[in-house]
Image 1: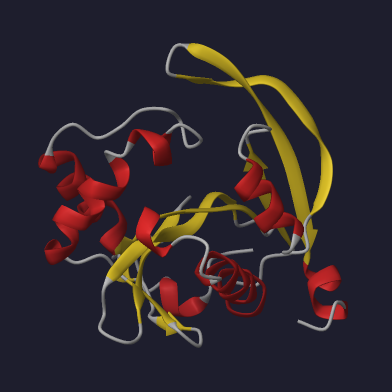
Image 2 (image 1 turned 135 degrees about the vertical axis):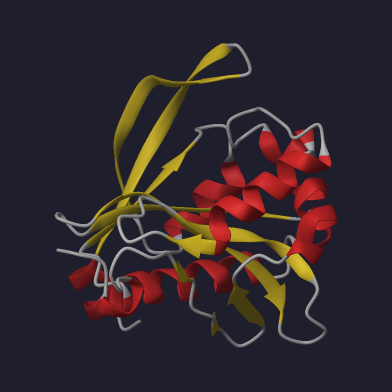
Length: 196
């Protein structure tokens, strides 16, 4: 399977589409997002469950924005800025990684600034991103890889409703130590038949 036709026009990169939920808008990153992106990815508490490495310079936020503003025809990852529909405030980022177009699968993930947590926004964002992945992107399977110590993320994906499929022992190296990851999966027909 190739990327959807509106992503692939010859060899040029395309802008990511904009889509929304009740309270949120998923849009391409903008240069004005640099300070907020840096705040998000330089926070040790946020990053301890997302690789462990924090940003140290604004130039790293600029690089991330440049890397994810356009989608190459053979893209293996997509990431959106997530902003509040009311006021446009940047609250986090979310997207798909490890995209395999042939097998129609991807890993889902995201991060949220601390002031916006525990307000139902992460659940809303995840559900909208899942719907976009299955309905618009045509994915057959979505995977969430979660640290066993990240209890908030586990509760979130379980409300997805993802199914825990196993544990990958010492799967990644975060901050100089090996970390296990739990694998959660969700299939398109499970999402569709779940009334979503």
